[in-house]
Image (cartoon, rainbow, N blue to C red; front, side, top):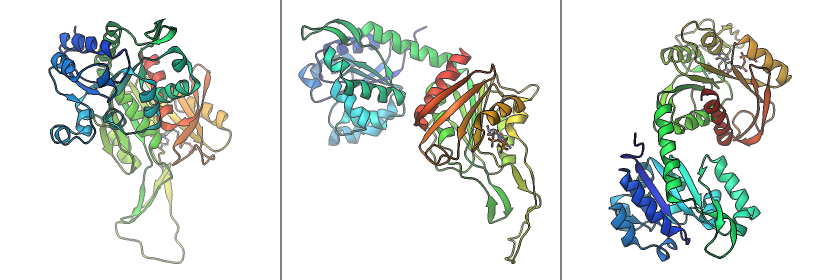
Length: 399
Ligand code: CTP
């Protein structure tokens, strides 16, 4: 089966001697039936001509940011939305550095920054540039964004030196892109469900009890699952986070709603319960607004435990059940207890007493407790990067 047929590839060619190989990439992609739109950076035009790209791709070439003709036909956002995948080949040290800092000073960098698709990079540069610490740091950062690297290879370079930094061959690049789409096709059959955010329990029509969860970590996990080809449902309590296109987002408020929606979206292959579910609900809801008095006694009763219910379900238990444990003390013993009590396969524990990694923050550090007694610590990093690391482990487990 040809997995590149009818796929939309946005190819960004940067200014390096390896740019000539990108013409071969276009030729091979077209042969496979893919649609190829190309962005040439200013320097790339010194190595390959727009005319050769147009002739091979049968599409117009994009180059300038805010060019009135481009923007009226297809602006920089539509260009990134159009594609199924972004390939930057050759990716020069300059572009790699710009992307790692989020610069958006030309069309190539802006489109990449605005993209919500998988980005592949095929670096090409001199061996000393490749090995320079600043380039290494940039590459590490790009990997943490979820960008995938192709090569570079080791060999003789155009500059006469020898070492790592040669752009991968077009046929190698094509094989990897094809593997990527093949993986997505197989994974599309796999389904994921994520719960995220806080819940609200209403006292009367205007007041409710909630918690400090922002939903960031759960949304990042859902976005990463979606990017990796899972058919993803995200059941979210009130949150200002944005779910990527393609995610089946279901917004709820109360625990009862979250439970009902979770059950009705099963079966799935993997379920990640990251929501900060309210443990109690109001015993007696008042349909009229409660008038102000000096004192008020609120009676609470226990809510249903969504995770516990699903992980012990006879017929609907997902193959992989992952719970979270938000703790302020005795993290390890509490997490281990939750792993057993809630019949999970993994528990991801974090210390919410630390303001820098707890609720509402952009960073997180966790320990994953596996059913087989093993434990793995993941160092403090952005919630987006952490989500990618968790999803990598999910992929390994399911494969
Ligand atoms: N959870 C759930 N339904 C609940 C309570 C918790 O699905 N009613 C899930 C959470 O999404 C999380 C895990 O259970 O994956 C642990 O949640 P946590 O709040 O850490 O633990 P609790 O069970 O509420 O226990 P405690 O508050 O006493 O620590």
